[in-house]
Image 1 (spheres, one colour):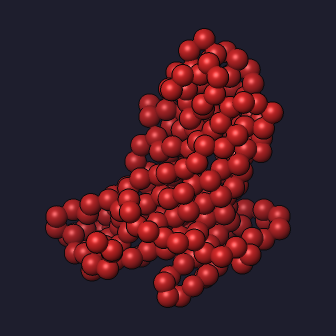
Image 2: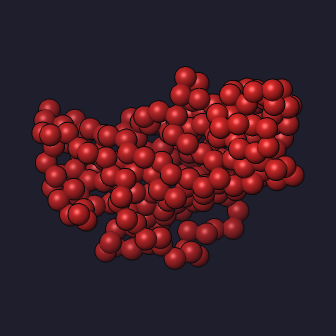
Image 3: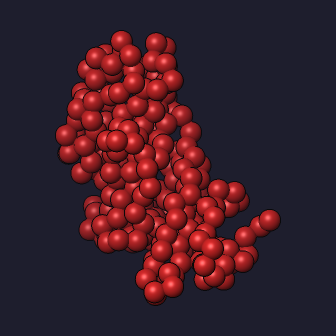
Length: 222
């Protein structure tokens, strides 16, 4: 069965620089945010995938900004008609400082993501926090998400562990556009100027190292 990030990645990207796929120890996967599966789904055939990721983001002329996804989960398995089904879970990420500013940026889910269709997409928004921004300042939104389509660097994915199954890969995306900021109140023009928004495709870059593991639902803890 195909896995979430591997569906979003193709083997055509340039190398990301010094390889880190073998350097870091694997994370501990807790599967706390696995979504409920359909009532007709067989727990022995449906599995929950849990991903962690670290990397850097450049938006317009600002970056690199550290990105740290603590957990991103989804479920997948066969439908009664034999096709593949999926249920998105939850994305949790850390807020990281934007270089040269008092702002922090945190990736968030901007709606269900497509992990199975070739050329699949993770829909994101980036929440900004800092002086004068309030609680609702974002780049991208549920109505205007930022679609991320990572491309796999040569040599991946790498098997980190067979039992439990753990894979690691690196990928980039430079194709996504970033819309003007929303929900930032009087600071909106300042945010747009600072990041050069809206920023067209080619002006932005996300580079990630992704590690993931999975368990079938009949083996999940609890």
